[in-house]
Amino acid sequence: MADYRITAAGVQRASDGAIIPENAGNRDYRAYLDWRAAGGIPDPMSEPTLAERKTEALAALAAHRYAVEIGGTAYGGIPVTTDRASQALVAAAYQMARDGYWSGGWKFADGVYRPLSSQQVMELALTVGAHVETSFFHESLIADQIRAATDEAGLEWEW
Image (tube, rainbow, N blue to C red; front, top):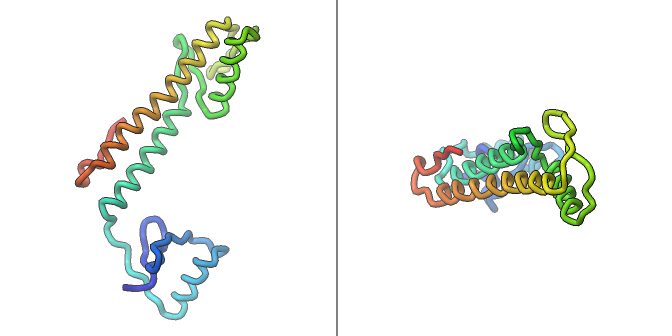
């Protein structure tokens, strides 16, 4: 076995399994390049193991959940942004409305500012919160399926 092997994630050092990013500023990558210059030949990329495929599937799932989470939802048929900053703003609006300080409105994803009562802004916040929570819950169900997979077919998932 060579000192290094090529993987889908980059160069892997055999001695400790560390994945080394391809970055000339990284001393481990420079050591790899020196090893290659001295005649070293890394083991070729092999088919990923089931464990590696599970890791890849879980990463793809997390990326998909994030896209769903920040992709928006609707309140009363009106589109609402749900990016992380909007989630924080709606949580703050909820607290203001709950504590009796709300007297404004909300700018929706369609760019229109609409006046909202305290009750409506709390409903909006609960709608956004439910959207976010549901995306994480859905991810957890699929992640359990992936972790339990005993073959490649178990790694296939649909949102």
